[in-house]
Image (tube, rainbow, N blue to C red; front, side):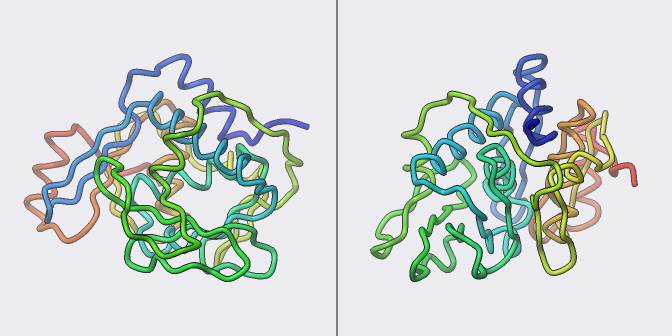
Length: 234
């Protein structure tokens, strides 16, 4: 069986254009800016997939963080890591089939019976402190993992992504519009944001500038011009 098509494309992109920017994240209201190269994104995905392996997760990963913070670079990594591990990803609260849940810093409570991982959503990926018992700090746990790339084969027809509007198999994750240019993305739904900000650029050789939070139209236009970013191709 083949790898997930996005996982395969990211690994190829890391070899071919590893130093080029892939994802630039902004939150203008706080002055936050983080630029991640193709290789950096691939390394974070590798580490996160290896964390899932280390934790023994082989089923579905639930990510309410993808709903509450769809545009943050940490949130965007998790579906790819799940697919690389051969898991499905559910953007929302966990259901009966989930083994691990990924939350943000605003609600870092443990979920009974499930491994719970909390993302700091810090611009530079710093970790969280004073988490309750039963909750792991994503940054600390992931950074302790090796960068080794090991992708599990997947059944193309197996579930890869679910949310309250979509049910997509692994083959479908590779059917998004390929983006060959640098695009400006304003977060919306979890799937649309993931497709525009990461999947399309990975497949098409482009990059994305994701702008989270409130920003006036003039300031957004200036930021787009400075980053040489345009609206995604529909």
